Image (cartoon, rainbow, N blue to C red; front, side, top):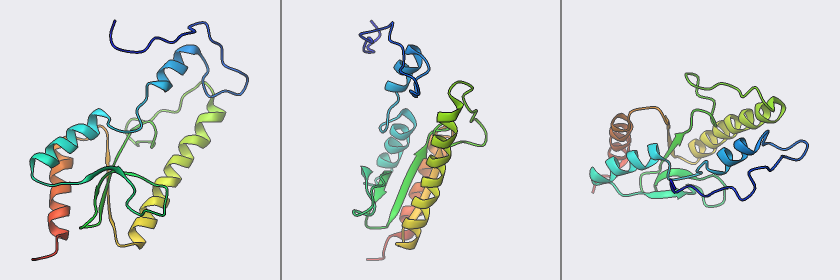
Length: 155
């Protein structure tokens, strides 16, 4: 066994209008992580090794239901590591052919929400850093460390 949970009903068929066009797609979608992805963990590890401390999957603005992958509260830096599919990476995104009526507005709304989040945080004095999951973790961590250090208040 490879550590993945087994779908209790492999013959499952989606109801009409469902997001899952097949049992295989359903299993795949259920296994997608909302946090602690490989790219996030790699970046966090490097930033932590550089001596910076942060909150993981936290709301930069407590009254707004948006969470950043890394939050540096004292310096007001919010970091997002965006998945190429979910956030429409210009290099790697391809729209699924199956169930296009579902996916197109969903992905479009994700991108709109990203821009809204950037604007909300910017208006509140936060620096927003966004990285794609395919970017080199070392490069991302370096830019994060530079930004946080630059925004630290002198003692």
